[in-house]
Length: 157
Image (tube, rainbow, N blue to C red; front, side, top):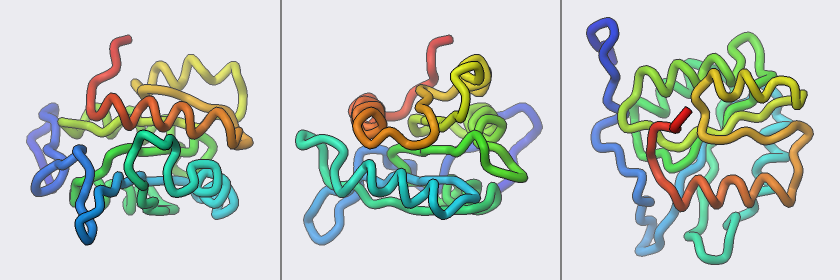
């Protein structure tokens, strides 16, 4: 999908962000981006089928490349995006900034960082939140649940 330079792209045919219905069940779609399959597994396990009892079930979409992230955004319907800041060759921090700049509305973005000193990069990327690697199975679902409750937005920074 191409847009004139400087104009935000619209995410997918009908950005949903209010949860999909699957066989009369509400399901929230969470995209997990990392080039490391173990990191994606850790995130999935930490989130479980529902990061908080008050939220609907989640469906995780694992992707390992930046082009796959962009294709998922073009299709739309994402409720939360978790990006590995340590991914290579395209890191999640730069990708978060690109997504925030190019897609409107943009689902909440959570970046995973390996060093506390990188929090300034998470702020620069305009992500809604950051969490540390390795994945904390208690903290990550709390952050994800908070972002899922808020829905799409532009962070105030």
